[in-house]
Length: 487
Image (cartoon, rainbow, N blue to C red; front, side):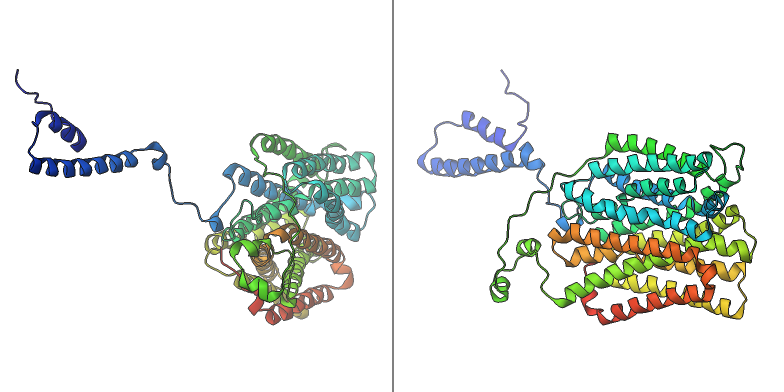
């Protein structure tokens, strides 16, 4: 029979096949054959290792500084933050009219806008003690509060009860605990790497920009419904619409949000002397540090909390002041005032998107300086136009655009900077500190904005410039200590 014409598929098969065809070799040939067999045996070992399925799955371990949670969970956090911001701002256009219809004053309308954050701060004291480092339970509480609070807000006109507006906003305030949890999630060292935190904070500010742009615009649009009945009309419709949005979003969150594991209790750590600590310092031991050792670190915390308060003090003041001021200066209706607020927000939106793209390359302190400088320029221009009594649509819009862009930009980096400089175990504490600073700014800013016309617009702007100036002194004093990783 003719020899097989099928070629061996591999060198290994050829070697095995050759062994059957060769006769018993001589001693010299045996030596060569044994060496060849050793080479073939080694080749088998190499080739076998190369095709093992387990080895195909081996990949370079991901750098923990760039880690991110699942996209579905990020969508719930970032999208939910945008909806919370929308819910906060949608009433701004018509709040003063709603309060006036039920016998309230302009200052009361500022209280309506700002009061939710005060009660949110109170609620956080109790919720954070029982959350176990997780997010689903607090978010469910927030969703339920938003539904109930907005329903009460919508029923106040039918009940003809002024303080029911306030009660509805207070209940909604318990839902605004989600502002803190969104920030904490985007800086949580268990799921977010240190070089992703400023980028995610930028996305939260995108949601913030969406809220204060779309919120007043939709609120003003809904005001044009008029007053066909006492339940769903121009001033109550924002409450009903927002409640419906939250019911749908709550269902979506229940389906796709993936919570993080419960936080394990950290064992007590005995702090060593400075010399001993320096001798064994590693990235792991740095993450386990639980105390802040230098006055400069406390200074950085104070500076970031102050800037967090300042940003929302200015933004909250302008958002509550614009409908009142423009009604007197330009005869604007709530619809027109809402459009004006939204126009400033929409104009700043592209720049906030650019910030998200380039945040990976810029230091937090640089972003903070750029944002606060833009905002200060806007305040100074407004003060000059008030002094010369030449406030026009164009000059007011330029001021509002610079303020909206600048202080939204500056607010991106307060928590992210602290989360990069402080131990991971401090994330919960600094998240709370930053959020309480936000709340303090929102409440005081909204009340001041509501009373801005009464105390005099130049005095109102002068107070804001003084607040920014104090922050500038703190910033320049701590410039070296504010350096942190980019991203």
